[in-house]
Length: 252
Image (cartoon, rainbow, N blue to C red; front, side, top):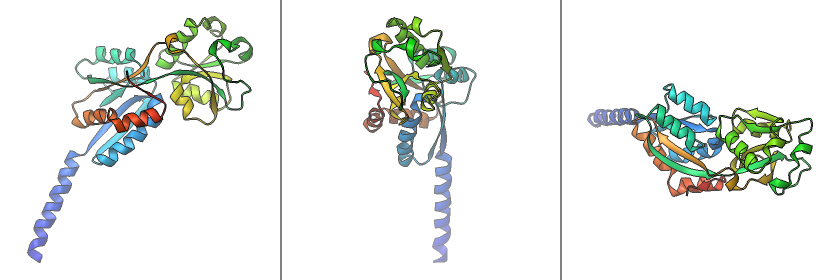
């Protein structure tokens, strides 16, 4: 019996060492609007690949892109628009690979849950009256949600009625927080962000043609095979179903 113990211990030690060698940390830089759904998909991924460890950095897409430009140690980047993905490609052409569009989103106008405002057509919203003594919450001009919102308001002929009554948030979750806390009467966020909160309600949905398509391109930024594996996992039917349940649309 004693003779068989030593080989067994050696085999176990070798297996542990091999697993440790294969273990890898994957750093994911992702748009703030992906926070909840990406963590949900990540939990499922790590059950299947327990040797991989996912670390997230969620923020405004522009902030993440600038950090990547400065060689931040990201293995995967998920942008909330194509513009900032193109920026990363331009600044880090050797790193950026395997670009894949994961999903699409829509733009909505929200108010606190206890607001007397009712859901209706965006053109019927009386911004001048509602914003008297207050402000409309928008994302920073550099983050996608802020840019989409301004474009939609301009195309609908509504920008002039709100341009002097704007409060900026660093990303879409900051805009959502303004409305959740009841600090501001109106905000513009993605429909998926409105869906995760029981403290806000959708007042109106912007027509897609007013702002264009909101896409989420992703790309690997390192040679780690695990980064590509997680990116591929995000495109699988199971992951796409989770994205759809969160309110995202399948990429067209």
